[in-house]
Image 1 (cartoon, one colour):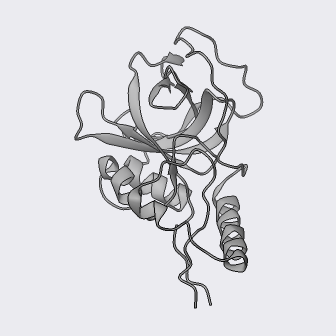
Image 2 (image 1 turned 60 degrees about the vertical axis):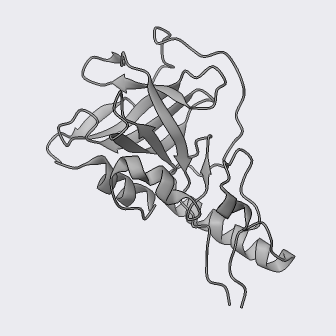
Length: 212
C-alpha cells in the first residue's frame, strides 16, 4: 500500500520542510493522487481553475474603479442575521477541515493542505488582523477576475455575524504576491481605507490520502 503522498503541487506553492518531504512517488501513484486532487478541487470550487502564477504588474490604487458588474455579481450581504463567525463559514464553504481561531489556520494547514501566494476558486484566503497579531480572518475565493482582483464569500467581516458574497478583494502589494490587500466596503460602496496583510491561500485538497 502506498502512503498517498502528493508528488507535485502547482507552481507558486509555498513549501514547508514537511511539505518538501512529499515529493517522492512513483508514476502510477502520482497520477492517481493528482486525479483525486483535481476531483476534490472541482467539487469545492464554483469555477475550477489551476493555482495560477498570475502576472506581475504595478500595484493598483484604492481610487481605481472596479470592472463593471453584470447579472447577480454585485457585492452584497445575503444574510444580515446569520450570526456566523468567519471560521465555521469558511470551513463549510471550502471543505478545508481546520478548526480554531482564524489566526491559527495558516500554521495549521502546513503539511495538511497546499498553501500558496496565488488564489484559485475554492481556496481560503487567510488574513492577519489589522494592528493586532492576535486577530485574523478567513474568506473563501469564489472567482479570480484578474491577477490583481478576486471575489470572496465570507462571514462577520463587518462584525455583525453577517454573510457577504461576491466581495471584491484587491491585491495592492508591490510584487503582486497578495501579501497586501484592500477589501471592498459594501455599506459605503467603495474600497476600505485599510491595507491588510495576508498569509496567502489554503487550497482545498489534502496533502495525504490513503491508496490501496
